[in-house]
Length: 353
Image (tube, rainbow, N blue to C red; front, side):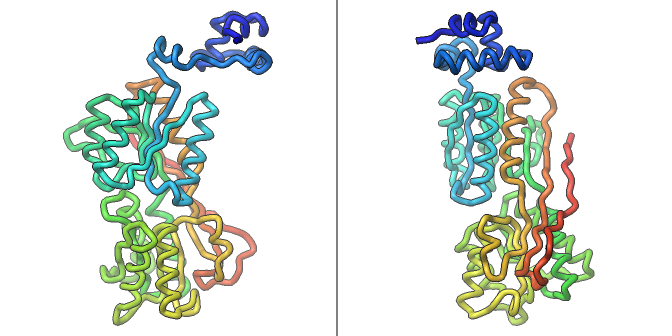
């Protein structure tokens, strides 16, 4: 079995240089790095991860706790996390908290006990116990997709990365209002999620911008799932004066809303215009094609890994919240004719102190 010393002799460098290349502990000239990697490949060298972890107190592994991994958006996030982790030489342990605060704490504890170097978590609607555990044990962690407010007692904040929510939702409402709709309903997500709060706020801002009144009866929570989205859409359609247009706040609830419309024999956009938050692979295959906000799922995942690695390298630096822009994908479910090209929504990335 090849050793690190064998790799060093083959590459014509020191053992320390091989270590720096494999562990990423110090910058190495590109041609030297390539010589080491070529030697590793030629000799079939496999690092002894267990022995290395005993020396460095690092396992070169990261924990990822996200719910509804079957959701296409979270699948994109997982792809981004995995690709970025592998690029930096980290393995990945994955757990599903099921958006349940008690189970969330349990899976985070289990990942921590596996001695992962850091955690990436999509927090539940009630993340108090999670935040307390991470703070008490000083676990390097990054929150993704949903942000958590800073503790009122001045406790530690955590790095966070998510897509913009409020502005893109405002854009959907303004688009529908611009098409002449005056009663625009919202199928909102699970109460307590930051994404739910922000998309409701964006919905209200869109109404204000269009000069339309806010009617609380037109906002129904769909619990962020297909079944809840179906119930919420059914409730909106049962109003004495139902909406003529609908915004659904995630892809699962969009599917539920479409079921509710189908069961009532209603067509989109003939009977009701529809815009959705979250684009997904088959949105372009529906008839009509779904007008949607597309979130940068893979980039959210990749950025979370980079933030976590920066945290591991500099544990005391100030926490950051990074928001990434979304794209407005203009199709036909809103009632517009086919567009020759997609238009991008104005959005920005910002870092909060």
